[in-house]
Length: 127
Image (cartoon, rainbow, N blue to C red; front, side, top):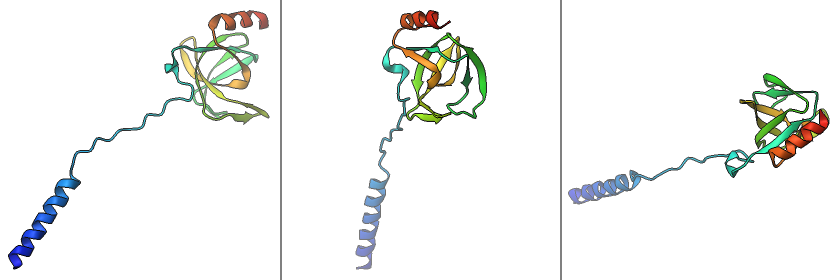
């Protein structure tokens, strides 16, 4: 009788162990920017302020990488998910490429265009 109970317990542990150790595939969630560069084309922007700070991160207190003069054309790669209010102005932060330097600018000081040609035309108007 005791042997029969031990065999049942051993059988139960074997079942539990086998089913709990199955190799399940797990997938890591990938989070893309809200306006992904994978969409197939870039948007273009023209700087509308006299000196726009290119920052390392999308935050007012982030390190300034360089300043971009008014009328310069930048490639817009993505934007933040939520708008932010800075100096009573609401806008997205844009991740941009400025002559090979990548960083973030506050969108209130960028005029956005779908094509580079449109951006170039506007750039000539405001210089």
